[in-house]
Amino acid sequence: MHMKMFKRFAIAAAAACLSFAASAADISGAGATFPYPIYAKWADAYKKLTGVGLNYQSIGSGGGIKQIKAKTVTFGASDMPLKPDDLKAAGLLQFPMIIGGVVPVVNIKGIAPGQLHLDGATIASIYLGEISKWDDPKIKRLNPKVPLPGTAIAPVYRSDGSGTNFLFSDYLSKASPKFQSTIGANSSVQWPIGIGAKGNEGVANMTTQTDGAIGYVEYAYAKQNKMAFTQLTNKSGAAVAPSAESFQAAAASADWAAADSYYLILTDQAGAKSWPITGASFILVYREPADSAAVNEALKFFAWAYKDGAAMAAELDYVPLPAALIAQVKKTWTSSIRSGGRPVWTGN
Image 1 (cartoon, one colour):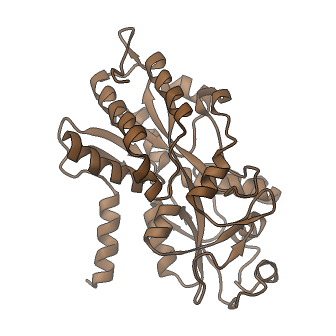
Image 2 (image 1 turned 120 degrees about the horizontal axis):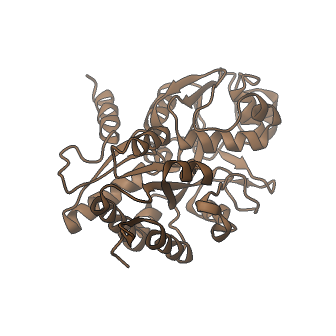
Image 3 (image 1 turned 30 degrees about the vertical axis):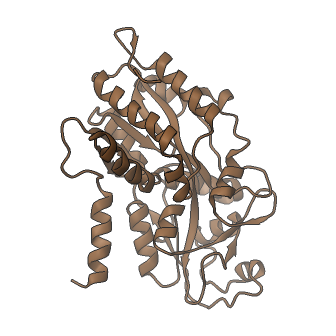
């Protein structure tokens, strides 16, 4: 096996679970690949500090929702927030954990990170099969000084149910009426063309391996793999690059206090500096958990991450939640997660 292939296999294998030798005291969770890089970093630091590990399966938001509903994990993780009625029907509660951005990435010979500029309507046309070459006039109009080749475009998409899929398809639905009517926004959609790959890890690897490819991944994956991410035209008409600052700009106007059950979607926000595919990643737990001690342990980890994990999150270009929102979330824990009529969370 070539060393390069071995490294890719090792990365994909490691992404499947944060803890292979999970002990009974470890926290169990499953779901979104979008926050996996920061969850891995937090888990390592928390294990060294407390001895408590995090056994997290990075299987996509759809898988996380299924696992928490099946009660096989203490918490689920999803980048697509569940609607209040769906939460109520399942007996679940959700809260935001971290904010980040999904970025289009390309593999075009000679194109450097941030050099290519696209907009939502053009990307929608690519994934609809209407634009098939990189030197298409619509792409050239956005990039008059970029030497675009006549290479065939190979769209890469998430084959599993995922919040990354939801954020990307939600953005394209807002940019293109045709995309909205034919494909729509969901964690799992029917892509008319392209190559499917599982997880952010799989999309990153497939895009890197395929000449002429375009894909979409959480920004940390693009940075870690040194991928050529694109600039995007945002709702205000400005060309912006993905960064913690542009994710923060998109999240700045979010009114979480008015959001029922924290149901809030951050794509296509106004503001000259806003990245248009910004989203929060959410945690799902039962309001009346069968194992209250396990949920309390998980909430202790999340409380620690809010307080002491912000700098680590910023290093990976995630946006930590503002203090007021963290205080609101902790009040929700105390008031809404209960066992025997008493709050499950015993922290502060």
